[in-house]
Figure 1 (cartoon, rainbow, N blue to C red):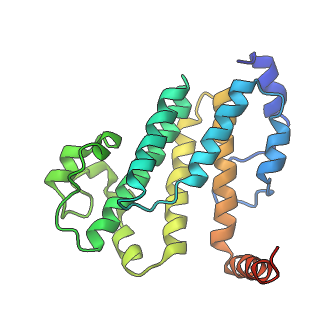
Figure 2: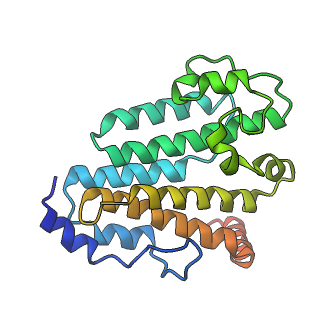
Length: 225
């Protein structure tokens, strides 16, 4: 664990990522970000990497083949580091992915909540959801606004708009937990998530960019690169 003055040097080297999600932020690749934080302690650096990998690896899908893997990965990470900000971000990601997965199951015709008790270890909303399966917000009143429109976007297969709604929620979450964190590892953890959100936001907001990326990947596949 580094001292505050050591974090200060790292934090002040990073471009500002505060404000509205659609602000004109300069893009920073993950590779460049890693160069900025290379002087972190080995444990801190690994914690930032694990956090970023979890957010990228988590795809908001949910089926019988991925449920167990997601549960195991989530619980392992929550036990791995003694850091409240890390735990808050992981938990928020779990909650979001879990609820989106349940909405998808419901849209696909599932008439009642999953019976896999092991899977419910990931959710603090177990009894609410089980008793309010057919309600849009699963009876979780404080999530009504956050979940509003998700059913419609999934039914219409509006993947890009759904992604943007998810990113907005995570950006607001970062604003909430960033208070009182300025020159510490918590700031850097939140910064890593903000950087990832902005990267995904720019892709989701620029359909031409998406087409270009798809064409590039297609050509590489054709030419065997």
